[in-house]
Image 1: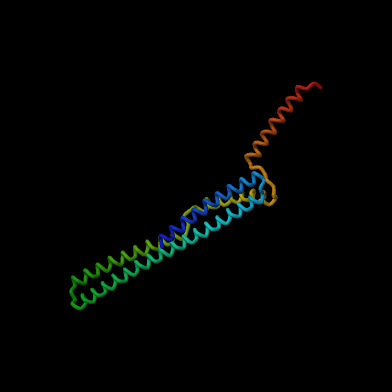
Image 2: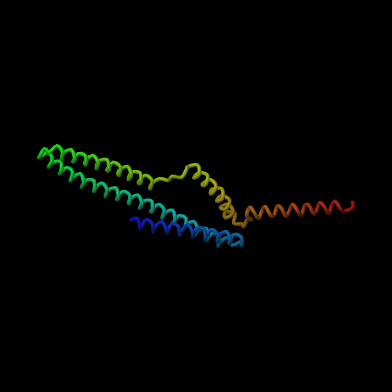
Amino acid sequence: MKMTSKHVGRQATKCIKMQGTEERKARDALAKGNISGARIFAENAIRNKNQAFSYMKLQSQLDAVASKVQAQEVRAQVANDMQSVTAALDTALGTMDVQQLAQTMDKFVGQSEDMDLQTKFMDSAIGESTTMSTPQNEVDGLLSRINDENALNQQHLIDGQSVPSTAAAAQQVGADDSLEARLAALQGNRPM
């Protein structure tokens, strides 16, 4: 089951890489003014993203099931150990050998403590496999940033126009400023 979980994890990673490739293709198509092609690439990117999330969810579920199976195996082993201890107790009680009874009880207490430790470990493993340990404020910040970026990209797709990126717009503003400065310099040199 763990091998299957790893395989599913690799598939999720593959889908995430394909999503990035499709997003780059969509960005290039937008830059070339190919809106219909950009939409196709964007749809592919979204499909890959959704598939990656499905794979990650499946992997998480497989890990949780594997942990539960492992916990059940541990419990079965403990049950077998308890049966052997109980049989030894029956023998000790039958003969009323106090020394043998004390040894058997010590063994029982030790196994009981081992069982408690194993149960705590398995509960912890199951809890970790089904929850995230990432701080919530970091998650909220990332989601906010992604939402802001996607709002801009979605608006460009809705308008159906190719809009220059922020860096290209900044270069355009810089070029406009230098043209205005040249114009002012020419006007200042021109006789009135």
